[in-house]
Length: 599
Image (tube, rainbow, N blue to C red; front, side, top):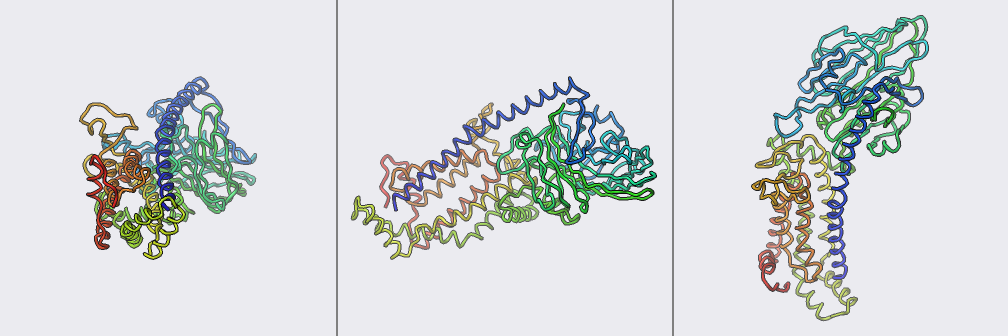
């Protein structure tokens, strides 16, 4: 049994060391290398597109092609790009910007409630920008026609503002376009208080013969996040494509494959998602459509999520109406959930990456959000959530600590057996198993509560890392953003010395507090007699302290508070069981010149 325990601890120690080495020696350098490569690629693309400003950008969809258009050069000033075309202003409590009348394109959108940094004086977040800029990003809805339809709305179509002068929640706007065949397109655009646009097209066929039209929609961007994504979060192409279900495609995969086509479907949505923001299109839900996620390298590199619906036929003199929804904004959990219910958008809540433990992650957020609304501070909400989780796991934790207390009670008998059997490992193992049976002790009982709580811990990590509600959420003191690591570091005396320590040496106040609480929790029990186990016993809190230093501060605060509650709970249970608490003896032995043997 001791041999198995030793191997178990050795395996844990090696795993932790491998994880730490992997983080500092591979992941961090790789992320920095990817960041530098991304900046170099953008600079190279800028040079190429400036030398080829008239390159034609074909936008092929599955089957019949989507319309093309010229790919503009990059690097143009944003204000100058906006001034090049007629526009309709957008102004709501949540967003501001404008609609480009050329292409009826959503290519100018800012999020009023969110700033680039924790400072309220920093610029607000820019989501959409014209294609001519370095960070070009837009959404567009248009049509593909047949020979009888003539020219139909596309990227170069110049619409006329025929109703309204500013898009607000109370005032929709209407755009009009009539082509050479007498077909009239009237587009009514409305927006709610947050981030959902409704685009309703009324098409009247004034031609002498029937026409066939397919609607299309695309979300196109010319850049990607400069910070490489981590494995717990999906960024890139996303959609729920009818019966094909949730589709998530990363940037690196689409750069390799160039195009991915989930297949024809009815119902669903598609778009591009970042950590906190997203742009999606909800096509007409009753019409079959084909979807494609693409990376284009002709002229200027770009990423595109698009759909093309099956054609509809409009008889001469008849009309038809199509409705698209465009979501463009912050992935606020209540807002996204409300859109799913209000517009019957299938699985729209999966726009937020809740992960494999969806059934734990989302309820945990709901609980934390409840406490936030109650106390007004997400840090306090984390502490309160920790208490609730501890209460939920109270019976399991009691079983764990009771088992540990019982194991300590039989420690003298185990020492006697070791002396009795000496090097007879088989005989010692059988005798110990009989001792466990006689004393009604399950040596593995202490492991199960820990294993069961791992998904809960991971779910909490996901909540803190992915939800925008945690972004720039302050705690107290120096923690101004619970979703970011503790900004302090002991290596410049927590800011007293005028230099920034390297990222791998960042060791803030809260990680140190967490390490201390973990150290105290481990010292509640006797030091293992085996030297290897004793070494792991001593160094594991140190390793975890450095490992968690780069984690979000909210998670480190949770872990420190959870350790503190565990120490209190274990102390109470051990006292009730009549078992000696080894904390002070262990500390005395640790700092004495000659450690005393375990009792």
